[in-house]
Length: 296
Ligand code: GLU
Image (cartoon, rainbow, N blue to C red):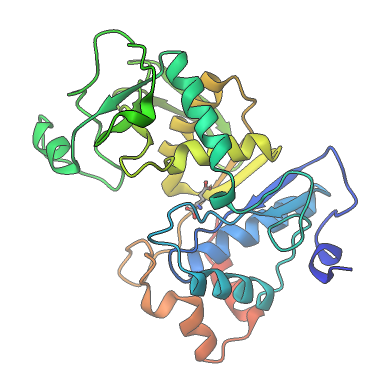
């Protein structure tokens, strides 16, 4: 018997609320993760639902086994439990993204067949240079459309095209609206607030957006709890759900944990890192309440 699956909220519940913890093991967890995961857990508990753990380890150059190990250790130490995941199995596995490549590739092909994607040769530097105005803000720059063909073009063997990434053609001017379960109604305009975004990377891997959408749908997630820094990503992903003919989950965006200078936390986070806090002998309960503070 698995102790984690046993402790997880609503392990016996089927067909109801399904939430997820989806850490990327590209660094150690910090207070921002704790806030998101704590909220995800509480939402699942409130709804008598199921919580799953997905290991977002797609990027093999950045995901390290040591971070995966630390992630499990930190989550267990904080008292998190899940009823499906890489370590406990479940009906919608595998739960490691690195083992789900085939599904992402199928989705990419489907988008290409339906005229939603095109190859792009621009480097990040090109994109920045081709922008009419300097790029500001935390989100990626709005792609200026340099490689976007006038009308969709059929590409027979996308794998054979080297040195390009593939972008999703957003419906220019369309308002993408959703009711966030925490922040209320949100609306973003495609082509203005965000532009054509990458779905397949130059290095042959699916982008975060494509993988997240494919998995959230395939794993029957009913609500995604994530940081408010991902609001625009949610808008992008809603377009992907629709283009792929998949049902989208609900969303709950939580406020970000900031450091003393008001900056958002990064993977190299110094004092806000869980490892550092554990070394300072913080108790799990103290860390959870630290992460909850000023959370609204
Ligand atoms: N693995 C992603 C991250 O850690 C998940 C974000 C999300 O899709 O909610 O940022």
